[in-house]
Length: 86
Image (tube, rainbow, N blue to C red; front, side, top):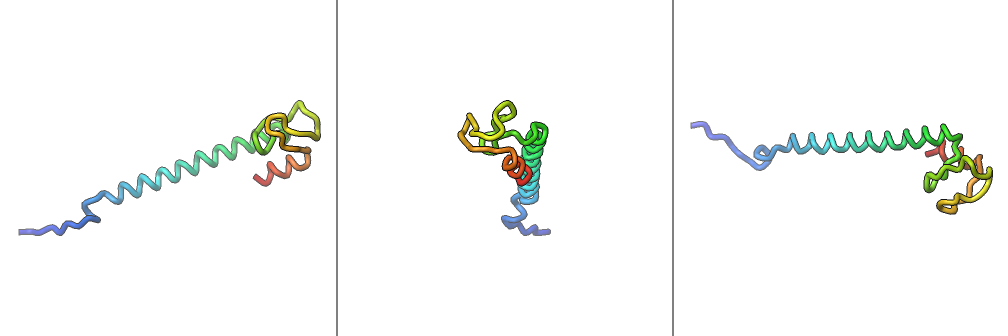
């Protein structure tokens, strides 16, 4: 009597697959944003005395020097500029 045309687009739940992909992409963006926000907040709370390469705290070290963890040279002016730019 009534013939329902079936094609591959309607037989696969594309809507649900696309909703899942969209939800995963939004979730990933939120996780990455949270990580950036927490890292910037930590840097600001330590007066930007964190190595931008490895995240090592430079609070108790000399004003100018090398990071003991990764060997990156640092000074307070450059640290603040780098952390505010990130």
